[in-house]
Length: 205
Image (cartoon, rainbow, N blue to C red; front, side):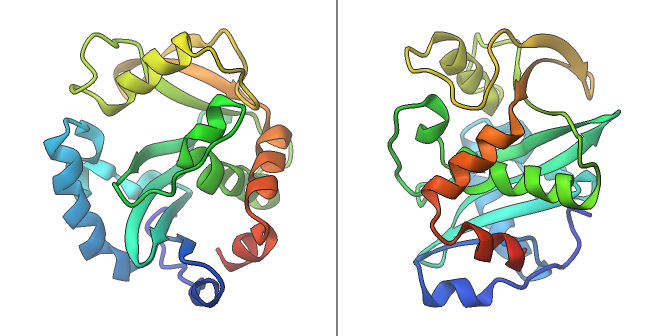
């Protein structure tokens, strides 16, 4: 589950200032601290530890950068499909990255998405379909954090690498959202290209 204590990532810290790990109970105080930060910025779904609802996630991932929380996200099952980058949010400590594709500008896509997909393929459903969501109402980006992401994806001049164009409108958890389907193999390939120790990180989750 998303709140299962699965912390096995201590070895990464010897090789890089960036640590990507699965959720551990030791992370709770740090997450609560940053919930205040997200709440101040109007990211409603991350405004408190209870609002995160990590218990419904199959896997929750966190990135630490030089010991500071940089990002959080997870994967959940929705009917017979899987939604990645659930509750995705970053802090000012997020790694700065650049690339040709829109996904390569967003740390959760580089640091988390490929691991969430691989986890489902290896442990739950080898032929799973994956999507991520942004909210339909993008009139006020400070009401829901993903509104700004929705606006960016529709208006970007950069090409997509693993996201498929033409999202479909769905209602999920009583909220109207855009479902953007994902090519899992391209997403895993992207993660492996950007993270030389990708396999080691995955094995530690």
